[in-house]
Length: 228
Image 1 (cartoon, helix red, strand yellow):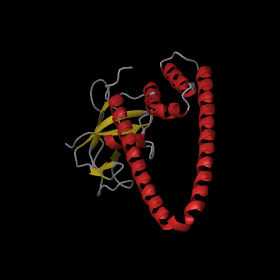
Image 2: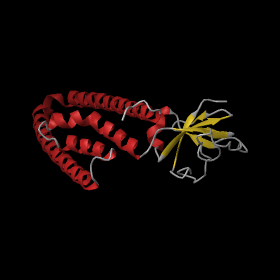
Image 3: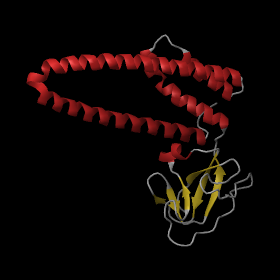
Image 4: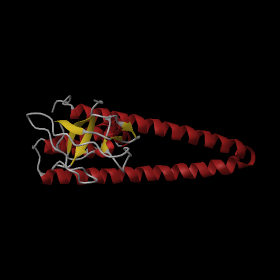
């Protein structure tokens, strides 16, 4: 039997895309086996689909289960597909409360970026705290809405500050370019290209690191490794 993968389903046990119903595990044991398919498994066309630990964020839904197959899982990049037979072996720890805390964790992780730019603006920090309190039943819907609105205003204010900074930078860059055009145009172009390439690489690396952190954090929630 091949290693377990993870299947996200709607609350009623149906798959999000095809609406196929999966027999759910109970306290007595795993769900019933679903029969093997006919033909070769092909991603998005034929077979049973699930995700691995590296692509959890792309398939989030109301509930999560481990799913085992009696045949090989084929890695299709953002998903796995198998011919089966398959069954859900156990329900993992995921519900509305966990989803809200996980979202707060992600926001908390990047909060220092905002607060470095606006060190005296506590609206986003307070929104995260209110969202956690709401998840635990300690804040009302009205309090959550008010905190979210305030955080939204903070985001707009930060965007306005960034736009002002960008305009100033563009003005300075245009002045410098006009001054240096006579002797450094080619060198400047090469330098700009190198800086752009380095910036793209750094951005890709940062994005990959963020996705890996989020996937690992979500895995910790799914397997009950986070104390709430």
